[in-house]
Image 1 (cartoon, one colour):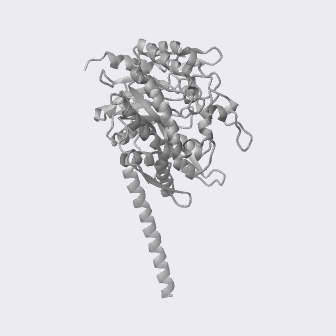
Image 2: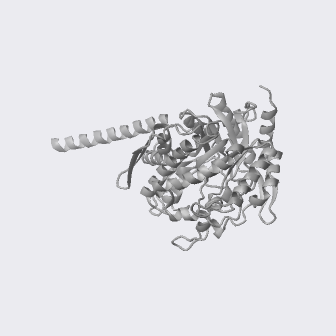
Image 3: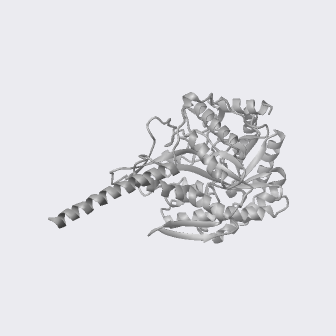
Length: 476
């Protein structure tokens, strides 16, 4: 009997100590990773200020707006089907003519002038400029010279992105960024276009969202090449950041490189536990944060790339050229998501919204509080920050005004805190081909009728116009 009593006592204390450890761990995580929500009823979101030299802009990406792309990894991807025979793009859509921005850029520059913005972030379509290995299309090169000349005439500063998701099909055939030895192809392209356009452009982004390319394309299989291979995703992520660093150093040593401002663009997307008392959800959220945010931020800060998942992937490297590479940091921020575990064998994990959050047309909600959190996190790198993308998919234009005013209030708070902010680019100038979502997601300040290609300024977009006008006219 005494032995049984001893066993029961031990079991009891194990349960008590286990529960205590669970509670302590959740409290520690809660304090270390808070999830603030502001009382918007008590905040004057229009009480914002920015210095006159602050850059206000809009953004786009070549494949999404130009049209006529038929030689890239994305043009190929749009013709593919998944294992169930379903098209890779929602509704079987294809980019096709997109917004005809290739031909209509003069009209679109006029729309930028109407917004009052002072800068335009756009990407070069590598597959048009270098359609075959080592063969450069002089007509495509001349086209972007014309775009830059038109921007200069309009008084709009260009920001060029070298790699925004799409690359030549021949580069995909070489294995793209799965192989570090392929980086030299990207460097060759970067050097050529920098030599061409550096006199007309001082702001350069090397690689856009390496974590999205790697995780969605090589782990989830929703972007080209449609792989579901964790080790491949980890290697691609590392190689894309390494490509940024090598391009940065290479371009800085070219004529005009010393005065150019060159940076990488990273998306920060927070992952939170749906139930903050759930330790398993905390674990999944922290692993997801490392995969999407932490690994790259640590790599840029230290030069050490660490990605360790037992039994799946174990990749480490030290690349000193990565540490501190960049004159600025480009932040893309949209929202956050809650990790929710559930008793469902088919779908054990859901990315959910909390009750009361304002939903966008996509799977995420408005969360301007997270914008400030992301800016604080980026500031730890010690670089000036450009917000290179921020916007909301909102086809009915019901929340765009609220989104703009609240997110710009969060941006204002970051500036008040002393974070070195240089500019903000709204995503996007106009509705466009939103990658795997096709034309279903409407991010544009301008609505686009894709039958007529008519652009119409949305009512909700006028909140951005007011801030740009008021801050540009203000005296400090």
